[in-house]
Image (cartoon, rainbow, N blue to C red; front, side, top):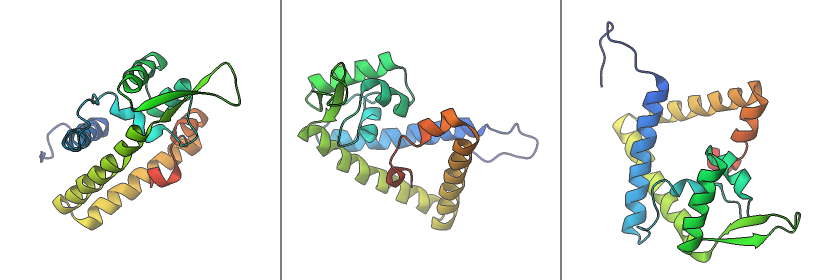
Amino acid sequence: MAMDSSAKRVRLSLLLRLLHREFALGIEAALVEAGFGDIRSGDAKVFPFIPPEGIQVRDLATRAGVRKQTMAQSVDRLERDGYLERHPNPRDGRSRLIVLTERGQAVQPVAARAANRIEERWAELTSPEEFETLHALLHRLLHRIGEADPDAAARLISIDRDRLD
């Protein structure tokens, strides 16, 4: 993937997308190996964004960066497969909260372990120092985007600080 100085510069967004694809494939393989092969790759986006107290589909879609209709379809499939449940919202009787079932909760540590292995491997392929620098730069960029754009800030703070770090 090396480029000479006369070659067209590859956009950062493409590089990030390709890295995300490799990351997602690694997570998907780990889920299959752990017996969660019925989770479609497009539905795996749900799990990192569900807090213990539950969340409305609308807010889940915002956090995951997808349309509400797309998220509703994922939630329907995952509910049917036993990963999610809908509970009454104690703050709003008209809405329901999406919560992880015991089976759904079992997905998160599998995915977290796989994510750690992937990042460790990437750090080996570069160097631990370079990987940490990349992590810090991307984190700083996200923070500054959030500071500069209130709409982006709402999307970016939708993740636990622990999950962003």
